[in-house]
Length: 287
Image 1 (tube, rainbow, N blue to C red):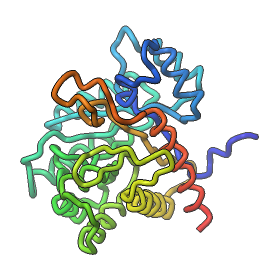
Image 2 (cartoon, rainbow, N blue to C red; image 1 turned 180 degrees about the vertical axis):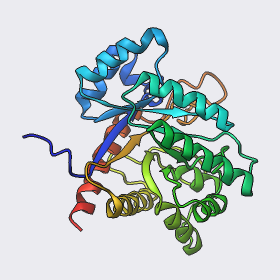
Image 3 (cartoon, helix red, strand yellow; image 1 turned 30 degrees about the horizontal axis):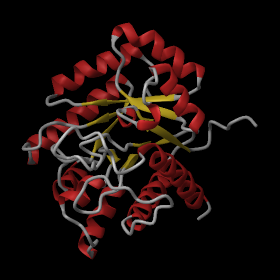
């Protein structure tokens, strides 16, 4: 059946960083890992602009498996972002850029101005750019991010709420925290999927998502999808990146040593998150 590209759709991507040290991909080449991602049913890959000597290989692989491609940027200044956009445009075929702005101590009007400039540069380059909610960056806390939302009508976010849950030690989600999170979700333009328990940033949620925090994250992802769909135009795409990182994100039994013995099967967890995203998307569509 032919895909109708006019209908707003979900695009579930696998994080290339999340393939690092993956037991299921041990010894696999780049080509074999891309094939593994495609055969598992992912729609695309979230990674990095390939090095010049790797560009043709990546173009060939993405085309062969009909995969979308998004990349990550880590600017500290507007000049950093401008340089990155030039490289991204030269490479071509990039769905969106996920941006971690590495200025965690920049606040108030200077921070708003930097975000506004990044947005303007993105528009000039013609590439969608979303600011990630992430510790150690310009959006490292809920209150600050909400200030940016109030100041910038155009601000669009990559939602990764694991950072706010662990930073706020949210074992329980208070009414106040829920209200703040819901405000952030009004700017959902992409998601990075990972679950925190309020103590660790990334936990194993169980084979079928039995972890009690899963209920909260599913609600938030659904609400963000619903918000996005209410504004989505013809042909719009919502990226949902499954991003379960290697140690030290992944918990290991040998924290004191080589950090090679993970307690979780990250690949199986990644597949579970992929299925969860598609289920939630279907449920939101049937509201």
